[in-house]
Image (cartoon, rainbow, N blue to C red; front, side, top):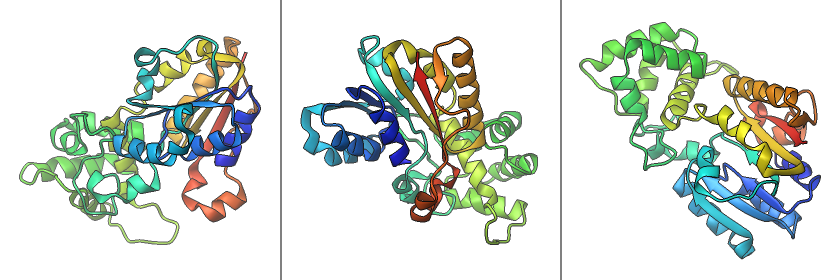
Length: 286
C-alpha cells in the first residue's frame, strides 16, 4: 500500500519519518523521493534485508540512518527527542523476497531448514519450537497466533512424529500437516500449513509480544498532527492494532483518520495479489 502510506506522510510536516520495518526500503525510497526535506530512520531486524535497503537508499546519503535491531526496542537503543517524528510506519509482514529464500525457512512451499529467524543473531528457531515445546504450549501458539483449524490433531501428529524423527526441514513439517489434514489442492483454498508456519514465525520472532507496548510508547515522540501508520496482514495482528487504537483514542492521545482500515486498491490487487490481506490503520497524534 505504497500510495496510501505516501499520502499519509505528505499530510504531515514531512520532516522526520521512522520506518520501523524497513525491509528492502520500498516505502522509504518513495518517501525520500517525494519529500526532499525529509530524513528517515530505517530499522529492521533482518540484516540481509537491511543491507539491500542500504544499497537501494544509498542515493539519499545522510538523509537516511540505518539501525539493525527489533523496532520494539527503538526508543531504548536510539535517542529520539520528544515531539519530533512526523510519521511512523510499522509494516511487520514478510517480503516476497524473504518468502522466496528457501534457506530462511519461512515458506511451507519451499524445501529448506526449519529456521524462520528474521534476525539470525537470535537463538530460537522454528525447529526448536516444533521439537521442544510441550503439547500444551505448542497448541496454544497455533491457536493464538495462527487460529489453525485442526490444531489439536496437528500438534498430536507433531509430538508423535518428533519422538523418533525430530523435524529439521520445512517440507517434513508441511508434508506431515498435509497428511493429517488430508490435503488436496483446490483453487482458492489455503494450504493447511500456511497458518501453522505463520504461528511459528510469530513465536520465533516474538512479533506480537511487545507490539502493543511499543505502540503505546509512540505518541510522545510524535509531532502534533503526526501520523502513526500500522499495516497488518492477519486477523490476530489486526485485532491487537485495532484495540490499542481504541485505547489511545479513549485516552485522547490520537484520533482515527478513518473508523475502518484502508484496504488495497483494485489496481494494487491486480499488480500484487499477496497484498489482498493487508489492512492499513492510520492514527493522527493529538
